[in-house]
Structures are given as structure tokens and as C-alpha cells.
Image (spheres, rainbow, N blue to C red):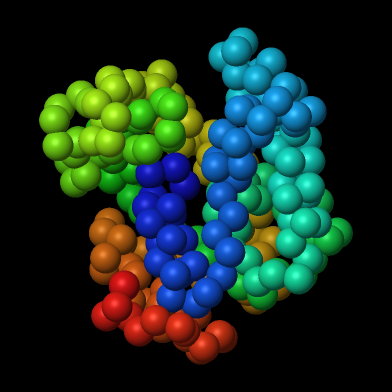
Length: 211
């Protein structure tokens, strides 16, 4: 879910096991800046304050994955819906799916403490990753903003929506025997278990301590 620390976990996995980290959020930001067909479509929705629909995200991800046929990769934030998962099924067979089970209250607190540097997408958390100077980006000194999405009342609605969409996806991967769930409130405590699981599937290039 949003606010689960999945970005941090994904970065560590990618570093430790030599995988390409493919984040749907990152691709979306790049396509918005690139002016391609998907970027133009996505922009139209975002400018109207709407979520970018499934088919646009799916098209964007399929294009990126097709370019990487020969690589070993890790998907971050995709698939989030059954439609996305079914589209992914058509082009590849997943080896492993990780689900992070973080308590609702923890997610709510984390997301409400989140501020972003819009130009770069750098994310700060006022509780555990604050900027050096309150309210401004460490590298550029430009102001940070809190997205409408991260205000407490919006967060609760967003988490409920995520849960409804993700449930059938989680069930599907569970029934295939490739889903592994990890529960907790701290990324550092969850990480050793994730590392151990992945080490049983692929040889690590970095030891757990090096991360």
C-alpha cells in the first residue's frame, strides 16, 4: 500500500540482488515530462484532479517491460489492480510477489507526514526522514509541498480504495503459491526476512549487512 516503505524495500532488493528497479510512479513522472502519448494522456487526467486510469498505466508499463525482455527486474507499485495483473500475465510469468502488511494507522500517520519536492519527486517524511531545513528541499532549497492526496482525510479514503483494488490481486497470487506477505511497522525489521526469502531464490550480490 501507499506509505508502506515499498520504495525503500525495492531499492534494497535491487541493490542486493542486481535487479532493475522499475517503479510505476517513476515511469509516470518521466512520461509526464517526456511529452509522449502516454504522458499527454496522463496529464489530461491529473490536470482535472483525477487518478490516471488503469489502461493508461498498463500501456505505459507494458511498453517499458517490452524494452527489457532480456533483463531481470523488480516491479514496484504495479500491478495494483486485477486488470493490470491480467495484462502482465500475457507478457511474463512472475517468480515472486511480495506484499507488505502494514497497520492502517501506521500508513495513515506516515502518509500524512509526507512532503514532496515536485520537480524531482524527492519525498520527505517529517517523522523519520525530514529535510535539513523545514519545508525546503535539501538539494535545491526549493519549497516542499504536501499533496492533496496526503492530507489525513484524503489518506483514509485512498487506503480504503487501495485495499479494495488490491484484494483480488493478492488473492490471485496467493492461489498460485507465489505470494509472500511480511507484516510489521518498520522497514528495517521487515527487511532481513525479505532478504532471506530472496536469497533462497537468487544469489545475492551484496550481503545483508552491506545494505
